[in-house]
Image (cartoon, rainbow, N blue to C red; front, side, top):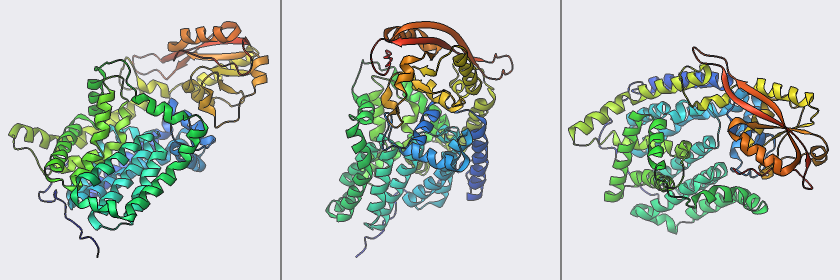
Length: 520
């Protein structure tokens, strides 16, 4: 006998007010279409971030694992460049479309959680108003496929609850496995599922069902090749990523930085509604063990708690919570159906719900516009890494030829990736260190590295460190000038972005590959 589909405990109150620009399905469709078109334009107009260029190297050499992450981002880029080639647009276009599809996933998630189509439409719009998607969807990172498979897993879990059909466990297991193959953060999704089953009485019956174990087995089967790659490479990426969990020096100043970063990436008004929604979901999960609200809380709060704890010791990167975006927006929709009784809080939250999407879209457009046109004067500008590399690569290749060097050497993966992508590819670009990063590639020609001079490139902030490391590795180290990286000048600002120091090195002091060990 099939399990009777339950109705959501959140279906008892309408969403009020509706967000501006997300009051109807037509408005959301138009909004998503406009923003997607803007991001597609920006995807081809803006240079690659260092990590994007690095992941492109992975895509050219597919493997079951890499030093930094599992392989799904490489698969995504490989599929993307198969259509439009090795260009900025070719690398990013598929990621942009997945950003548009996020609205569809959130719409379905909220609808099945609440039985409220109005709330689902509003949530589909709100997700586009966050900087996670507003500007972030323009770039391709491991978070891109992670968000996709995390969302699919949540959708499958909601169907397990609403329909009682065990076959949905196969979809859930497959999605969690693919999320793990995207980024190891997916272990928190698995933890959340277990907590959900344990906490909600009506869900405990699945511990006695073969379907749940079949889903778990499918998940492990999908994860197995990545784990096997790690075992054959000394636990490379697992050790690198999970090694971050080991506390270092106590430094709680990173916690408020983390909170501020999340407020910025969600945008402040949407962030307030999300925070309230998570409180509502947690309260209902604790008091009534409501299945829908518990699913949201259990798959969100453990990772948040871990990152707050981590922030007591080290900096938390803002994008580490990107996977929580669908559940967070679903929580915002739940919160919008249960405003607080305190009048001033209710007024602030209602205004945030109504105008949050407008503010978020405006901020997203400004960020994209700045990335393309440099319209905001910033002392420290993270978009600077996106520009000037093609001309810089050409200048470095001319210096290499003029000085009789056979190889361009680097001491960081970021410089390596940019010079590989934007250079002519007539000269080899080799990072002289961290060779495990390039385990997927054929090894460089060691004989050439040892017998011919190498022109080593180091970014200005790493110049002293690089020079010391080179002197420990080579018998001959000469300064060879520098190359400046420029962007087009805007308004009163100069075009200068950075200086790359050049060193001509030869005569390795040890046998084999000249492995430059920096202090980083």
